[in-house]
Length: 311
Image (tube, rainbow, N blue to C red):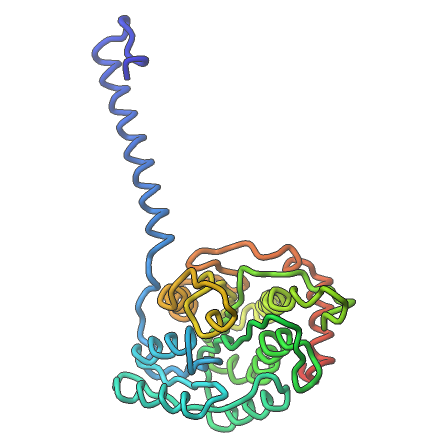
């Protein structure tokens, strides 16, 4: 303050300046605290009693933790996975807790026909789906192909969720207000529509990022399609390299906890979020520029119909 208060400054003007600087300082502190709180605040609690929530890939890791939290809020949870024993364990744990309920369905997301069978079973057994969380995914070191001959990341991480969502969409819309959540990633690679199946030499490393960006393009497209129907469609990067079986088996070191990721997903399920938006953790983020490319989204939509037979 010595540089501000000159010998010619009166005591009154000095006092006024002091008040002004104090007020500005208080405002900056308040804004900083608010920003920090927004970054770290947990998802708001809310009852899901009477709601049906379908979470794919929910027998382990992030999916299992989200299923447990959703059930604790009173929801009935449709558990999905490939392993019957692990599926039963999740259902039993939820039943034991006594706050929600659950039912397990087995389906291999490397097969479009298996995904369709799963979707048809859910349609047969449930009249409403309040929330669909497309969480199932794979992270592979080398290029592999699905049972349908599609690059495995694209098949499991994107095409399976596309097929499931499209098939269940009439039920989801009829259950409005409802939500569709795509668990994507900050790892995003632009889709090369001349080599989506990554058959060119050296292209395999783009598989995971391409499939995750495809989820986001689909989210943006679907949010626009459903505008005015009271269905919220979002995508998110829950946390970076969570301590999950998928990350451990990939040989990479975990950088975040499953708890952190589950908190971000829960915000998409019960919190205040904006349809058509990609989130990075608890905050709105900016996806790869291809997500805003109308032509790219149209190409993906056409390709998805061609590969799955589902519109």
